Image (cartoon, rainbow, N blue to C red; front, side, top):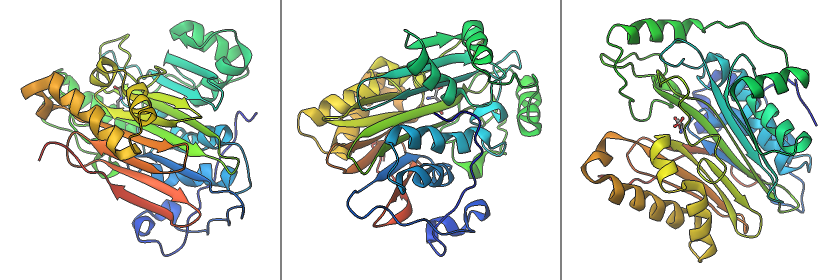
Length: 341
Ligand code: ASP
């Protein structure tokens, strides 16, 4: 198992979706193994670079589990993106991280409210593989990480997060802004509450053996209450994998994903015969019914892949995209359909 690796992003030269992203322009994707059909999908445009980290594993015939860890580590390590320690803090000014991971055999691990650790996804994997538990939180999660050899990073905000926090302190109003995960929006700071309010990458992969795995990592909603957890570290809400049926993951307003046990709901809808996109849509419709008029103030998005290797997504509002990487199409960024027109 890997822990402290750094990943160099690569891409298929000339692909339109990548052309705008200088950090992923330079190299070509290695060819996929001929007999398998590996696939990786992930949330938002930041998923393009993350997918390439995953693809390095999948294209060599590696395990989906290794791919989904390696993939989101790219995003966690990036200070340009607000997943990981570069993320926005809670309202006390402290960055707290949540992550979970799940493999093809219902093994799962999770950390929540973890501070000063660069790769929460790798700690989540250690929880899964080296403890009798599924979830560790806060101080205990940090103690475990340190005991496992993860360095304790300085308690320091990134320059962007520091600026966003200072701006937020002017009003101290908690008012999440939808679709802020798109990297083009990262630098915005809104007039009330700040725009950099939530940041997540969720990733699902199928390897050449046909096995599924998923990962999810986030700094959570920016300027959240101290101690607040969202859906992202919760198996069944932010992420769920059933190798016989499919895998699903969520991003957006975590509270409303939790309300419907989102990722699990999507997988159960696929079990009933729905294709990934239809299952994501049905789950979004459930959120919309519950929220009524308030649905327009939030964003919730699901991505899913089926055991047969189909993929799909659906969002409550306009503006959600997901990145897909497979041997046929290589990289593409797909604008998801949405409910509220
Ligand atoms: N779902 C995450 C949370 O509620 C935030 C996000 O996806 O942007 O913490």
